[in-house]
Image (tube, rainbow, N blue to C red; front, side):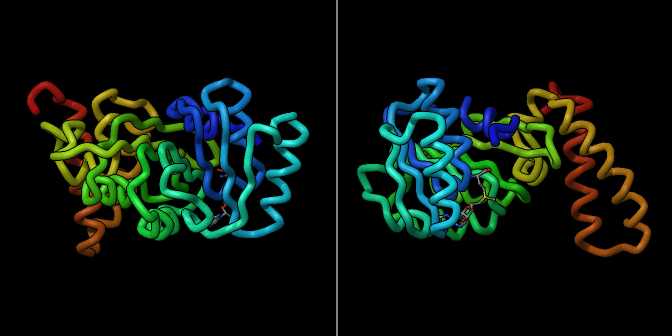
Length: 224
Ligand SMILES: C[S@@+](CC[C@H](N)C(=O)[O-])C[C@H]1O[C@@H](n2cnc3c(N)ncnc32)[C@H](O)[C@@H]1O
């Protein structure tokens, strides 16, 4: 199962050793090992069924020798020195935050592809000493954001000059590159929220304000 979102995640990873938490079919470790972006992989799965699926996927790709498979919850079966490069893909953002908050120490680099609410992860990154160094938006069943985070001191320069709420929500790099999928999504959300705004619910009004701030910045980026 190597769809576009996993290819996008793989392109943001390069490391001698990489850990993929919640691997299931092991699509991402297979891509990483085959392409040479990673020499060795540790796969972590919390349930035996998916761990077995991962073993089969890696076995049929002839990659088992370069992989260790470990049963456990999140960072539980990992040693601190193994946390240089870690990915979590295909999970909800809240589940990812719960897993990340139990890491024994901050991983050296994180590649995250949440199925929902990337804003939650951007906020988590900003509050935990990570900069968002790259992001992608990939078409699929939904639109999938992929984020690469690295630990750095001080405020993240990716957000400089951008409307803060809109950038946290929709992605500072995606805004700067005027990503066509993002523009499409913002226009669709603006239409939907403008219809709902007549009822005056606070959350709808806030959502609409964020969408309109993003669209206004996109229309006049040089004024920021
Ligand atoms: C929807 S699959 C995603 C598979 C793959 N990463 C992808 O992007 O296609 C989520 C997998 O994460 C595993 N998982 C969920 N929570 C986990 C945790 N706390 N620790 C390890 N694995 C977890 C589940 O067992 C499941 O196999």
